[in-house]
View 1 (cartoon, rainbow, N blue to C red):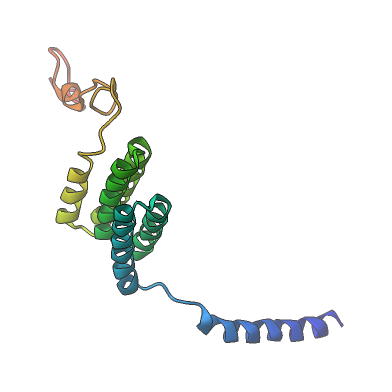
View 2 (tube, rainbow, N blue to C red):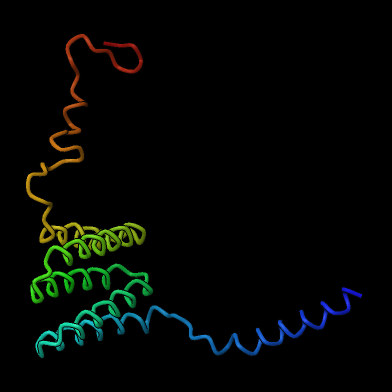
Length: 162
């Protein structure tokens, strides 16, 4: 008896899914590539008008569109826009942090796409987003990985050879 009530419910669910599925908008890379650029233009226009909340909203929309687009050029443009927005609104620390995260995403996407131009552009983009004062350069403060590779007198290689 239980199977008889479940079968119509399952068929109803499948029918509703088949009807609703074509109504869900699809995210395509072509539409989002223009979306993030349009949103960044809207952000710049809002800044020119002095509409700070509108600029914040347009930047967020551009970030979402670039993120959905899955490409690195959009993320670089959104990171640059974050720095502009931070300077214009006086929230440089907040937007430098956001720019760093966006640039890192661009770097990883460029690496995934094997784009040397993208990797170099993302690396150069990290320049304006400075590290905090008092923090030395390098992975662990003053540690330099090249120093560990130098051979010490009397040290042996991994094969036991001098």
